[in-house]
Length: 271
Image (cartoon, rainbow, N blue to C red; front, side, top):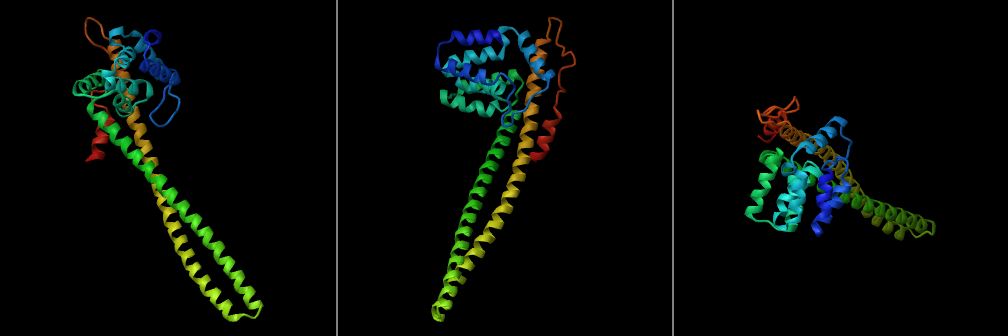
């Protein structure tokens, strides 16, 4: 990690400065949507594994090199997003890549970088689909809240209006002007009907908002599961590289099964 800082400081480019800023902001593990502390063991594993990697295999160093080269923007975004900004690097890193330009060669480089990190195309699709569902759910919830607030404001205004008309009708009766009082009361009934309709729409919007909140919670839970899946695969992949010797590969008990159980679960959900 210190090597990564030194490499970044040597690159006097805007992209390098952006990388350094993001890196300093994310010295503790950061999830894609939810910030929560990770276990000491997982943190130590990541730090130790990265430290043991050769410079040519260090993904942080590759991120710095890629950020120094605008043509490799998409790959840099994927690596930076996946390792520094959170597990949804394939999604959020794309925004970094888009700002730097995209072409077929860069896209292939991105795929290669992600594959080396242990992020498969299937994981990328899961992250993209989950993030898309989560974003749509957030937008839907905000729309429901806005609509409910609008109906609430309308209902309040109509209630004040019908109270005002009620007072005018009473005053007209007190002054012996019964025709005027009747006219005002008819107008008040019209306002009351509008008030009832607004309150009915408000009830519907509140119910819809509760449903959207439930959906949002469900998508957030799924996002955390995808987050965990990608983190475990990246950590296992890095640990596997760190534990490789001339006689062959071994994972010291830190590796994952060939097929992560969550992958099968998400396949079932998408069918």
